[in-house]
Amino acid sequence: MITAFAFGIWGLVLLGACGVFWVFQQKKFQGRGRLVVASKHRPGEKLTVYPGQNWDFDGVVVHGRTWADESNLTGEADPVAKGPGDKVFAGTRNLHGTVETLVERVGPDTILAQIVSLVR
Image (cartoon, rainbow, N blue to C red; front, side):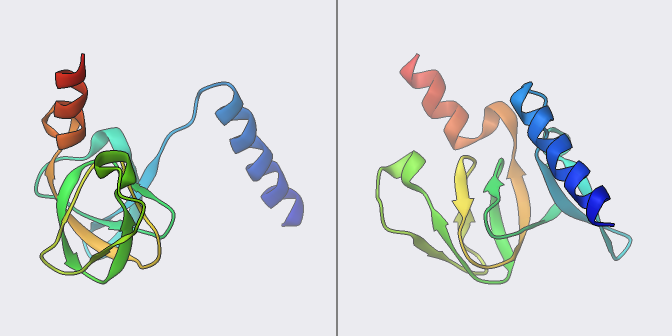
């Protein structure tokens, strides 16, 4: 078991070093959670975001409380409290709590993508 765990970690390190690294988030499907590749998100889905994960979509917190690092978007160094009804944005990081989030915008429709297109 320890060997399998170590091999799994080194496999991820090697994939990351080669630039082949996928981001997964947990999606509820028929009452059970399953991992989904981030690029497959669709508006209207509910995803569970754990501490340390980034939001790669714009959405609304449905359940749970956390602190988010929004410095990539706002430049503000202080974490922002998030709870049910609060908006979250692509490119920001979930710092502490596990939250269930409703996906509203993905890809080029996110605030982050719009900022990038304005800067170009």
